[in-house]
Image 1 (cartoon, rainbow, N blue to C red):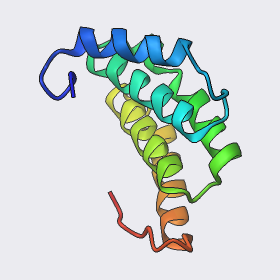
Image 2: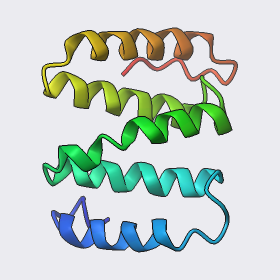
Image 3: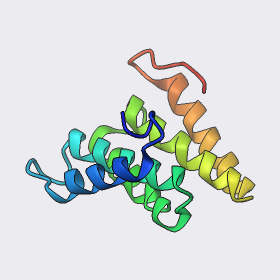
Image 4: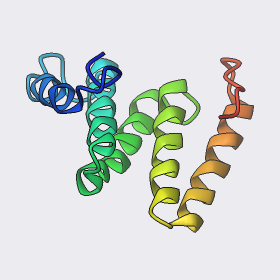
Length: 114
């Protein structure tokens, strides 16, 4: 909510507190969502070094949720966007191909191509 209101610094502070106070474990879907949101907030602040942690979140989501889970694909999409913004087009293209392939293969009907 803070980030949508342009209160990005406050959003980052709150998300950092949530990520540090992981009461339910590092591999819980809620914890992974908190990590994803924190990294997205860093990206919105122009903190690309910190945003590189999205690669770690993607690996964790693949392991915990599976390759074609909607949350995994969202993280994959955001990482591809980050790579593209930094001129890393080959990596971005590879990730987008992975995303499209897994969206089409999704048993959940998650076939929306972003």
